[in-house]
Image (cartoon, rainbow, N blue to C red; front, top):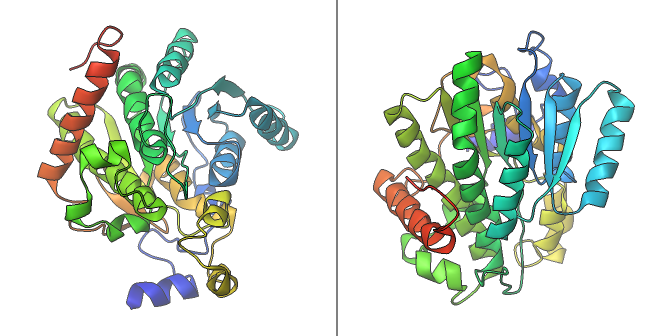
Length: 331
């Protein structure tokens, strides 16, 4: 109840920010950022991803936009550079539902020989009907989780090397959702999520967002075991007025939507937590956490289960090893 009142009233938490804070407001205090920071953002052609790219570029961060629609990406870059003429925005094509596309994207990025300080796994889809990726994997799970798992895997050594060379801690941010808490253990079967068995769009979306938090938990353990200077955290942006929400007709019925829309965040408010976790010095060294409204929060007990996190990581790693055995060096 207290959290609901705090959200509705926009009351600031320990960080000094709350649900009403915008992405620009939470980065105003980041006046002395290291030079030549590079951030890679997926799904940055609209919504909170585009706003995150705009705000980071305004702060002098080199932004690499991973985009499926290059025409939209070019429009985003034009808009950013109209506001920040000196902004460096690099566009690379990626379809996160395709493992081959993710591999190709990583090869193209690594060939640029740029540092990588910040990786924001932001892209997400919601599909009311059962659809499949080109590898015959359920589309929501393939895009929201598997693609980001592979992307992180392939770029992790670059992030660790960048942190070691620059002395600047790397940060990985997985964009999740509070809807992860709707998932029951009995409905979290890796095999069923791949096949789309008994498909329900809202459940599939929630499962993918739970997987993103479990990924954070296991990656935190592995990074700490390696003494790597890279952190990883999950964020819930809030319920934001984006295309994802408009697609959730099964989640928010038309009769309820008008009332619910009054409680939705603006896109700038929705991007604030991602920007805060990406740049704030207040969370230097913080890893394995879940943030909402720019403050550390509590995820579901299932999402905190380290054994489930390790099980999911192993299942995912095994799957991708089989699919890409000849292409990747898997640990």
